[in-house]
Every structure is written in C-alpha cells, then in structure tokens.
Amino acid sequence: MLDCLRHCDRALFLFINSHHNSFFDFIMWYISGIVIWIPLYLYIIFKVFQKYPRKVVWYIVLTFIVSVGLSNFISSEILKGTVCRLRPSHVPELQQYIHLVRNYTGGMYGFASSHSANMAAIAMLTSYFFPKKWIIASISAWALMIAYSRIYLGVHYPGDVVAGILIGITVSTGFLFLYQRICKDKVLIY
Image 1: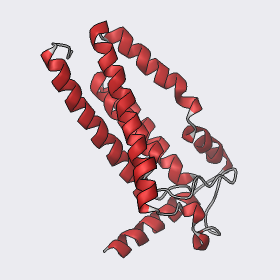
Image 2: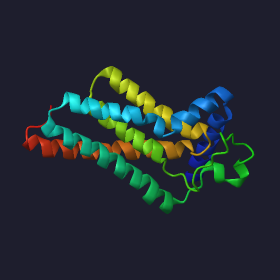
Image 3: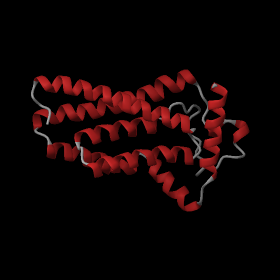
C-alpha cells in the first residue's frame, strides 16, 4: 500500500513537473518566493486593524503569528528531520527527468512542505476573520497556487504539499478554537 502511494506520488510529481515553459518558470519562481507576498500579509494585518476593535486585534494577530509559526515548526523542524524523505530534486534516479528553475533544489528533505503549511494556515485564518465568498475563494486560490508552484519547481512531491496543507489547516483550526474560547469570555468575537 505504501509503495503504491509512493509510486503514485512520484508519477503525479513527474507529470506536473514535466509540463513547463519559460513563462511559467518565471511566474512560479516568483509565486513561490516569500518576499513578494509581504504586501499581502501587511494588507491582511491592516484590514484586521481596520475591521476589528483594538481589544480583539492583538488576539487575532497573535493567532496568525502562532499558527504560522507552529505550522512552520512542525513541517520544517519536526517532520523533515524525522521522516527524512528526500526532495525529488535530490533523488539521483529522478534528476534526469526533473525540470528545475534556476537550478534551485531546496534543502535535502521535503516532507512536509513548509510553504504549503504556512500558506494554508494564513488562508484558513483569513477566511475565518473575513468570511466573504470572494475573499475565501481568492485566498484559497492563492494558497493552492503557491502549493502547486512547489511541485512545478521540482522541490516537493504532491504528498509533501498535501501534508503541508493539512498541517496548516489543522494548526490554524486549533488556534481558532483557542481564540474563540479565550475571546468568548471577554465578548470579543465579532
């Protein structure tokens, strides 16, 4: 069963990674970057300050920071060092088949995708605090686009990305539950 999952994961990775061109190489490289998204993160924080009263804003900001921090810690520090699954870009028998952009190979291990975990946590929290359909659709598409870019760039298997997404959703849901419990007593939920 596990061998079948690994085989399917590898086959799907090779299929996605093999469909590339110079235009999408450029796009996926920048989508996967962290610095390019700083204005979005700052805008989300700005909107939190704009929408919510001061007495609740710091709880919300703390929920974002701790959720993303813990998602990153679980995926980067705990799982990558424990599971030790090589990134596809570091598997010798795959290297001739992988399309790398700018020869970027990432660190040695890839399970689970930290990018996907962090972005899923941000998307989950943003959807909760700004529950408009267009915001939920936009932020979800953004998170999925970043997750896809990690496969496209050749540094994660689809399974790494799915695991990262599940980590981000689980951690942020846990902290939303905690936020609701803390703020319910203070009548801070809006």
